[in-house]
Length: 567
Image (cartoon, rainbow, N blue to C red; front, side, top):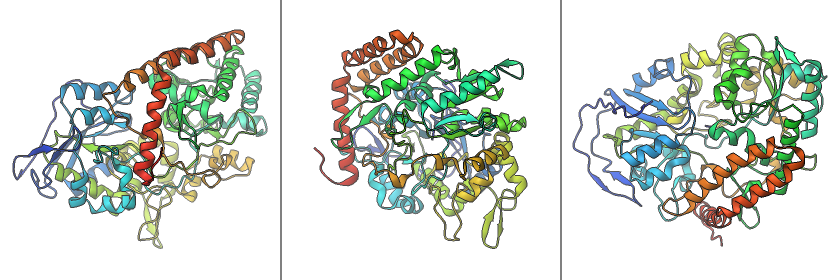
């Protein structure tokens, strides 16, 4: 969970043996579709496919890694990729939609509707049916969840940021504290915001500097859209709500509202305000850039984070590489009070952002066959495990990662990823999730309990042992304790364009990104006024009508997925 065609760089195509010109026909909605038998080049002829990904991929090595080379060898496909760095693809995709200049394939994240309305996306339904048996096998009876909407049931993307039938074995988010802090303080209980604050404060008072630099008890990353990840999303996490993007959905009525309106969340932001005014929250939180945030973490002087591991992985890898694994982070479930149940692992069913083929692609059949090969057992094992004899061995029928490979994977992950390509190609096709086994009785992925434990650093293992647990997830309520969300994860849901919704939503987002920092940075005496004015400003900008419209779409999604009528 979570993309280079710079500027107007022209797309490059190396296409051989084109059978005929592609016929563009009308598809569902405003989309395009192509005759699935035209423009097809043969099996493994060399072909270059252009790609844009809305998420960053800092270790992408232009397919010159071991896995990339093997993919090209097996399929003939070379991917010419551009990954966005900061804004989730929003600006780039808006420019694409306006200009009509698209890559062959695209991972648009939350911006799919812009491309659908521009007629940029192919309906993949027939392509999958005719040319992709492995994709059909993986998605099985969940194909309804790939459909765009009840009005437009086309399949524009195949979900790739989440594995099918995924079981989550570890926690990589939550409220983080350095291992060395926990060890010195005797591994204290950390369950509430007060507990978390007390730990950071106690260590900070004893160690005002680290390696000659000022200690930072807590820092957050508010650079552009990442303000949601470390500043605003934790407000619902710490107050017992699941992750539905900017909304909270009433599980009884399915009515949606901006989650900031929940009274509990006001108290979360009051706590951040307290942390700031007591000097525990980094004064640069709302002005620092992403690279500055990571640089501080890599220095080893940031005691606490409230983040997702993918957002600070580079910095933590730098700590491991420098032999500072005691400055890496433990993951805690932390709530406003002990009566609140953390819903971080509430099951959503299969749901995810995906990759699609655009109308610019000259050979969609070849591309869907490429995606289908990646979804085969051979392709999935290659993407997840690497190459047999180099990155894993088969011992008594079981795939085993050698100790020296695991050591590099754990302690030199950035270089390991760049050299091997393991994990870099998940975005390009469907896959089974963690905990699913193949026909050889081996897991498809390397994320299963034994391997996760083997991948922890010595400091992590010491912390886990001190708390009497084996993985970070054991700090959190499990899926079995929480009900299934019928509407999935709403941050994955594309909404129709051409309504007032987008304009109003952007207005509310602008207000959030201005007023939440103000609420955190104001004096404690002024907090209530700033926060209440913030909520009033949201409604004045049209939030109430926007929420009503979003509620309709939530109910439509439930109907599409479940077949039941929801009023």
